[in-house]
Amino acid sequence: MDIRRLQRLNKDFCQKVADAEAEVKRLKFEAYTTNEVSEAFLAQACLSRVEVLTIENEDLKKEVYHCKAEINAMT
Image (cartoon, rainbow, N blue to C red; front, side):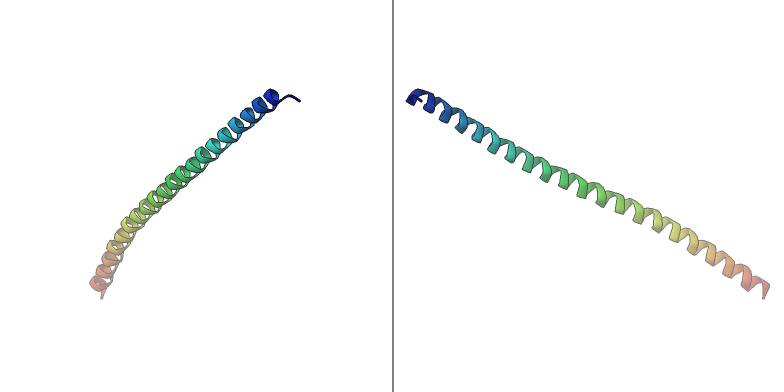
């Protein structure tokens, strides 16, 4: 092999390495971003569920209060 061919192959190899490293960085960032979005979505879903349960709890408290009032009225 002549030196020029080896130099060209080395240059091509170095470019492929640089491209692969850039792709790794991009994929790491994408994974990080996806994880952040996933955590935010999960947190929002939990907050929504807590709100629903709080409303249901308030409704049940009112129902219990009314039942107690009816029982007291009967006695």
